[in-house]
Length: 289
Length: 289
Image (cartoon, rainbow over all chains, first blue to last red; front, side, top):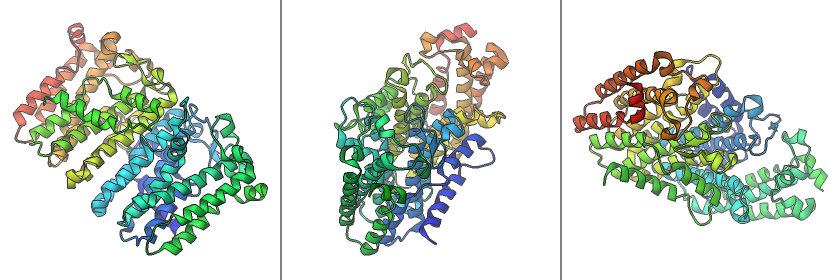
């Protein structure tokens, strides 16, 4: 089974658990809307790539970890798009969830998805054995307080921003969670795998900053110019598009260098390079050149 | 250690994990504000009472389960009070979280608390051993989709409400989670313990409906008359205050009857009766008499 199919099946299996006949239909529909169709699925691809490089000896655990990471990412998008944050009208080329459904349903969808992510791990908990606890802690660290994406979003509202803590929490944490979870799912120590995720997260954030300045909103399916509107730090505004593009290249190289020793190291490096080359859509690469 | 101290210490230990020096201070403060000072702590008291009746052989696991249940309850209050739901100005006798901090912080606080609840269980995961998976699944079922409090809240926005599913999910689910978690934490099968929680949840909801009609908002620390404003089903409006009071008594009796066999059964029944007698504050008991 190819990676894409594997991820979509794992996500579908997780979401389907919420779709019983006696579930409230609005929330069930909103939950599926938040997960499908996806974006690039960068984070679960990373989880799978790392697990496969480490032997992937319990594929059901890997699948659950990848699905949990992506569900948490999708939950963060739903809440970040709310009127009280970015008030985004579109996401992934369709109306944002609160526009398509309602604001109350958007809050509840995000909440239910956070629960679903942990449930998805728990459902393979027996098979995961002693990998379950580090998987849960990896997920928690990546999303909650004090270092996860909730903390990252909260830094944006602070008067005095700890910039490194902000950037690490806002994007780096879930990327580090994705690589760490892949390692744990395959029975490896997650600690050395975090650096790879952190650097890739930084690279992705840099690419995202470039897109926010240089992309066509129709082509990327979400509004641009948001960093300026929300006074967020931006590599593209600080360094210019060309400078940010150079920084992106450097970050991807340093990520490749950070791949720890493992049976499938060479192939993993190639996979990461291929994935990172998609961080910038073609039309932005051309425009930024 | 008395039950109250035990619960407050377990909650403090969980919340303290979010309060590192490099955490965003606003969110850290909001999280503590959401948990302390508490209300009656009915749900974690139930978890502890059930675990103690079942031997409480792993007290750290019991404490984590009780804290996780209460943290999820507090998270639901923070999100339910948001402008897009009840827009409540007060909660537990002080400004609601979004009024005291901000709406973005209220969304993030609820999110971070859901994560924290699962992390709290994961942190005792090694000691919990094979009790960890059923504890996680109990928490998930009580809070997410399709049967948890998220589902309950979502039913309120449906055109066609499945009334029994709504009431069960809205209040019963977290009470059933509280009793089931207490049983699991002590190594017992959770299934027979759910009925006790469901009936107590129904009793509590009935008491809450009476308060919404008959309580002094200053004394209960939150606004009243909300069921009518939000067109929510209410036992007090359907049966009148005296009728609802009779129904409450009946529900508490049926809960007592539902206590499964266990070493501390008699004492548990007494504890539940004492706790349920506090569902209605004294001034409402007098007014409703």
